[in-house]
Length: 184
Image (cartoon, rainbow, N blue to C red):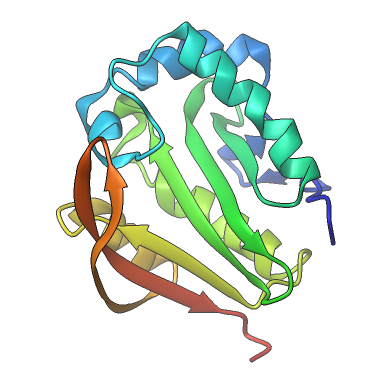
């Protein structure tokens, strides 16, 4: 598989859905990315974050999806289409059947199960329709809420990777979580 497809049918539950991003989402993305927790834990989100950043991020999505490396989806309310967050399948390696899951949730949507529901939808699609065999999450040790989400979604803590990457000018550790396909 070279190009990553968008989920077909679209991924949705009773109360939320995952869909492709559009230009109309830019103001909501800019507003959400003002949140200190998103700025702190989302390595790809610069601080300060503005409309230029959002448009550049949006413009990068189709080329990355066509190259087979990443698919990013908006997490929205199934009822109102309000933006609840973002979820991505990235660092896709089809040869090894492996990819990374990452997400952020808008401040006003936290504490409602948005992350768990969105991760479960994406995981089902990635391990099912895409046929991937392993999914990974890399979470900063201080991000306890995301570690809980990973565990609630069936990811297993596999260890601590010290000084794994540079984010916002400093070396950072990551707790690695993995989830395997039921086919293994």
